[in-house]
Length: 131
Image (cartoon, rainbow, N blue to C red; front, side, top):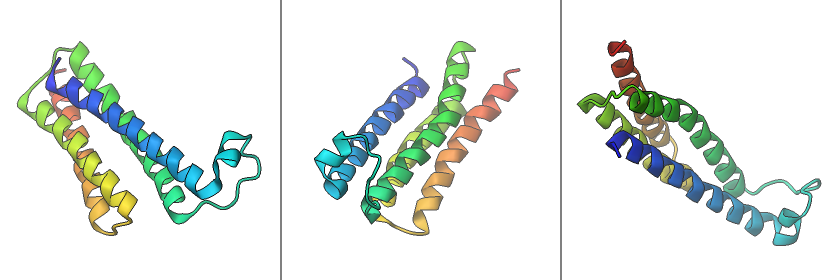
């Protein structure tokens, strides 16, 4: 497996972990009975519950950019130092981003997000160069 595909796999694992944290935050804030029910009349989410929801949504959005780029690179047999670095930057930046998001850390969190996006751009540049 290429490093890019490894980083994609780890990014999916991160999404699974974040979804589990989000689900746990929902149960802690709303109660198991409400979360296991229809969820039609949930109370307002607590700060942490709302933050984990935004975090999962944000990671999904990042994955919508990252996953197709890595898959296209794999299908096209494009793996360079830049695509490897881009994939590593994406994954590790997303881990940092997730921790900072859950802690509610301002200012630094968007920098971690930007590093992840830069990783996607690096892969994209290499794919365009391979055309």
